[in-house]
Length: 370
Image (tube, rainbow, N blue to C red; front, side, top):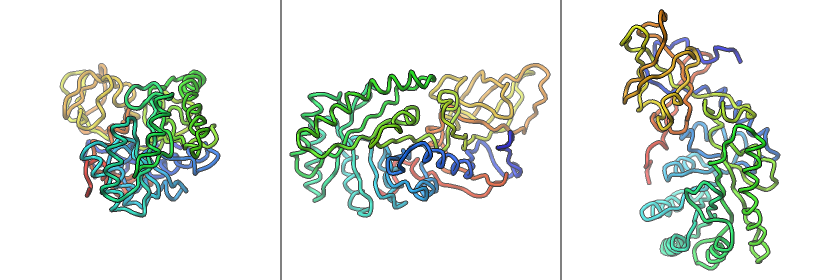
């Protein structure tokens, strides 16, 4: 890859801020992913990063048949793309459960499943499945230290799995263990923490099997722990960020060879002071949950550092005697690409250094049709 791989020759046609994607790099990242695991059937990538049908199609073309998502819209996008197997990595509650049931009926060619972490929700899912004459596979959501959702692996989890086994309309099939809190830069330290958190899940799996149940499937990890879980036989892995990658993971996961494939393009719109530039990339254009210095990194202007940001503006320090002018274009890697994608209704594809088309991020919406 050339150092200036990101340059867009017909940049004058692109209004900013804009999210651009380089399909050749996406394809390379997918090939890198499949090359990191022994069996493509063990991959269950998360759609949350890209949210469009085109990348889903590239994943399907690579032999991937299982997917993971967090919203009903993401699940429907996958079903519309004819993904065979979709896990809603979320416990559907209230109206979301009704939407999930409707999804199951609307797309019979796709096998849907969901998470559960308590008996009340399991009963609610069971009753809904009975009422609407369907059967739903469920995975127990394991709390392996992230303390966001889930039940700790142990006796209570075993009891919940067994309870799900006797509830009509639902069928416990596996365990879901997301360890997104583990992201040490040092791979060995990350592996040690990952293995420590995962060991009780494997013990629970074998305990369940010893009770006469089919061995539960385990769906584990995200991008940071993917290289670790990929070495475990029979564990399904669910990274997501790999398709586009971002600056945060580029710095934090140096052992992974994925390429940045999505950039936010911005322009200088004002020179408010002798050493400062104002760019058209505000909170509404780049994920802003990180501190100001960790939101966007400019490939063609790495010396710039941000001093303030508002809804539509980013002010950066350029230093004395800089040569920048209004209209200059900067190519930025998001520090966190997943929520950045959710800010854009479409991406512009860049091929052979020119704008080649658009991909609609349909699943950025909370609703597609259901």
